Image (tube, rainbow, N blue to C red; front, side, top):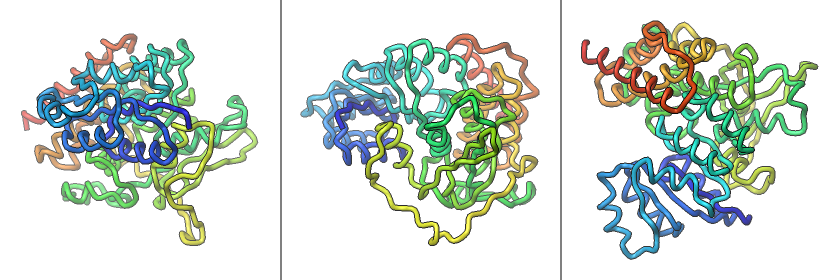
Length: 383
């Protein structure tokens, strides 16, 4: 495979699996970026020998620089470093798997440079979906979804007329607390919330899966990726995580994409599209599973999911506001500042606290982001 990749978020779960795919199929790694994992990034630099590397946390720069002084790699830091890696001339595709709002500007920078993007950073489209999709259309840039659900939808659309799509069906694992009542969630511990039944992910996305915020964010992403109205998106809880999502067409035929719960499948499809080749994962045996189940989400109990859907229905800055409020609330929960149940309460309250105009520029996004975070911090301090 004669393709060169720049990976933002290389030491996280998606990043490390992306490197497995690159190694399997001989893709050259032009650049690697991590937030603050110095030791892991050093090991990756030594193994994959990129031309560029970035440690986002500037406090870690000197440590990493001293560690790789013998390596022929240009080391950068901060947002400027991420954006440089997102627009390298030698990179054919940018895989963006950083966590949080940090991912938005590198995505816009990559688009401006005319780079195709394998997108695993949810906040890019949640907070700035209209900006990103318009910029991509204007530049003729392709955005390949890496989330297993959006990849499944993308795959189910191949060979069919987009105009004949009726709706999409987003599947959700339901997280570790599906079936529990609102009162039962009041006693959830951090250790319990960080234990996902099917997927091995970073702390933030694992908590988002436990609150079902992750599915709310994917609902918003799907609206932008596939140019849908909110009422064309249905969420179904599918505990086995084998059916990754499905598409219903106007004749009521439903086409689904199935596979073992392994992120290397959607990562590889995004990086190698349209080619399908052997993937470093296991094969799906339906008889081993025996039974696949589907249920409706509990929107009343999982307030984050309801808040995210309401936010995209309102439009404007609301998706950005609920996303940023969620990031701050999750951070507070992971630092033992609030209880699990409070995440959903905080995220929901943002909908009634702000009346902000449409998102027209990157600065508009960042202003909304700042306002939501300040609100959450003051709310927590006032407890």
